[in-house]
Image 1 (cartoon, rainbow, N blue to C red):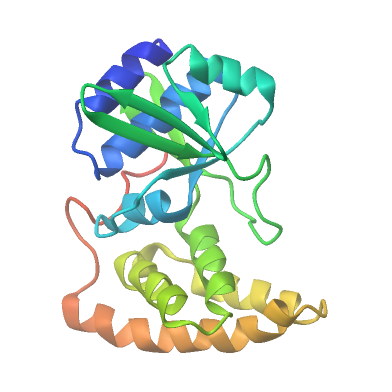
Image 2: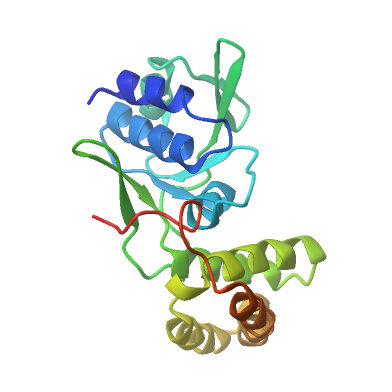
Length: 212
């Protein structure tokens, strides 16, 4: 399916929906000819269905050729963002890096968005690691973001693997690494009772379909 067709499907979806974010991810990948991975707040939305992102964060190739490819879809560069305006709608892309963060260890999950077309999204476990790293700053905002994911995707997060990664990171000497095990323990200890009370995520909005 062409990138323009995928983008048209995306624009037909609700603004904050996981489906729109995944279709845009697939459209960008098709336009550039390389895989992009959905990360950040939009990935949290895909895994939980409860977060409302302001833009779409994608990790993949960067550079002038990417801007040209996105320009062919109608996106224009605005500082760090690529922005599409169409019939009163706006899609804002942020392409912060060309590789995933150091502690990401899983292959991205792939979700079918159209017949024979998939979009890549950061795995629930890698995304949890990313949120925990941010929560080591000790602010209420980052802790709340981490807890949103921890509760919404609890049963699909590999917590023992996160503990192993946290212990390994703590020996590397960085401040965030040193704080990681304690932050992980705090987040999980708060999330576990909440999941037990609700029965955990289920049905639509409880995360992406199984990876293909």
